[in-house]
Length: 133
Image (tube, rainbow, N blue to C red; front, side):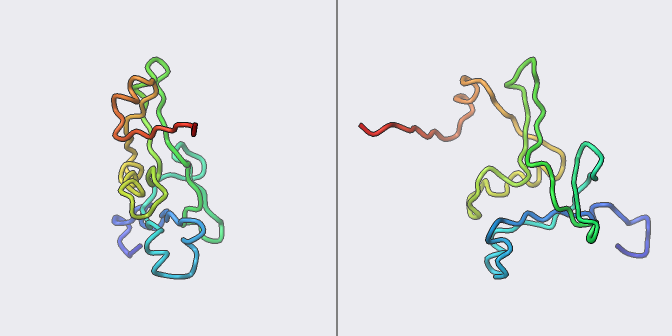
């Protein structure tokens, strides 16, 4: 971290890397570079709201984090907010594979509509499933 203690930050050594299973630990560098993201500086600790955990043999490397953060407004569900640590898609080349990382990293959220009206109003795409005749 360096000799100047004034420059030390928790996130310099306390980092999270999003490893994709199973390809993210394949041992094939090119594949791992495509599917994994990070490391990213991480706030938090094991006993606080922004809970993170680690292995005592490697205490600075974050091993687990909440899979989602949400703020639910019980008086108006459509005013609720949420964020995933990485993104909504599981496909590495999709724009939503890792687009939430900056939000997650900075403690920010996006709108999380609940009602059918608000979901339809804010939807970007629609998937219609129809049974076969």
